Length: 121
Image (tube, rainbow, N blue to C red):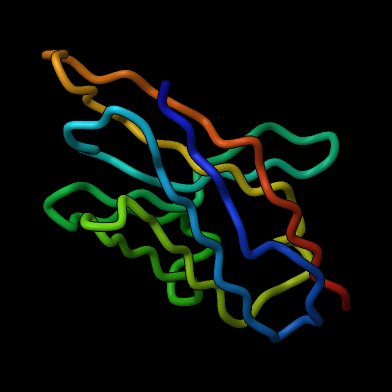
């Protein structure tokens, strides 16, 4: 019923920028938290950044000062602006959201299918 769709991944040179977007659809009342995770080959999935409905943000230490997370509640979209990209940022990036569906009194967590980000040296 609820779906998260990512876009904006691609190939970029070190020092470049990419803008990832994730849009939620379905019978949604509100989305308390939206965020991004990433997983590189052979590594565990890790948190990149999150943002609450009150615009409180949280970033992994490795991306602080380079990445910015924001959201558009009307469009049910979360955006990750990635600047000064490094080869170690190469990974599949996954959108993640805590969603309250219409008629429910609790949150359910959802994942997108992921989008590939590759940064060349």
